[in-house]
Amino acid sequence: MFTLLQLFIGIQLDLLFGETRRFHPLVGFGRLAHFIDQLFDIKSSLRNRFTGLLSVLTLVVPISYLVWWLCDIPMYGVFFSMVFFYLTLGGKSLIDHANNVYKALSTNEIETARQTVGLMVSRDTSNMDESQVSLACVESVLENGNDAVFGTIFWFVLLGAPGAVGFRLINTLDAMWGYRTEQYQKFGWAAARLDDLLNLIPARLCALTYAFLGNTKVAFKCWQQQAKTWESPNAGPVMAAGAGALNIQLGGAGMYHGERKMRPILGQGSAPHAEDIKRAMKLVQFGTLVWILVIAAIIFAISFFNGSLRA
Image (cartoon, rainbow, N blue to C red; front, side, top):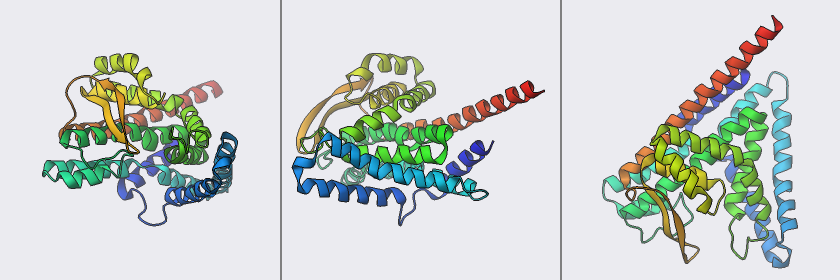
């Protein structure tokens, strides 16, 4: 029951306050990771898989252990657990960013929309039209809905605050180092593979959530046929199911690190437009509510079953 209470309060804190504007732990962690990255960049010969794995473990293990220690303190541990869970969630921040893109497109401020969506994606947004901005924003909402919300909830329920923190730290390192470029091909391998492993189950539960909240038949069809064509083994199911649920097409051409990259098509239907951003946001928002209700039902069922056995 404590898990359910902490889960509910953590999500409410995120809905009310979102990310802290100053001294956010994940931002500080990102700066520390950048320092490590620059340290190894001085001697590029050291940028290999072993040093990449060592860097990940050095950054993630001590912090996760500290979180576990704080959450294990009698009386105060519950408070720490709720706070850490709240800090790992990024649902409101994701929705706020997407909403800013939607508002800019709705008022035909295409340059503002390009700059705003540029805060959400790693591709070049400077020459995007309305449909391309919408596509980039929808992709970010669907994919990051898994990382910042559903995956975080999954690991919190499974392993408490240390699980949620560890998941988000590795997720952050993957976002920074997980590129298949010459610079990060080897050094970022450990972060990318660990993120793939930790997201294996949450991503598929997220895809299932998107499918049931939209066009279920099309979502499952796209998931089955298209997910395997995507570069990421976890983003594929999430985005294919999400695109199918919304009856839109994602993927296609995009500029990454100065190179034009042709990505597989996901989903079916028309190209995304501004209104599809709001529809993608609703998938994440309603999906969060569904997860709370399902988790609550499971916890109550387990409690009832255990009570029956004792009786």
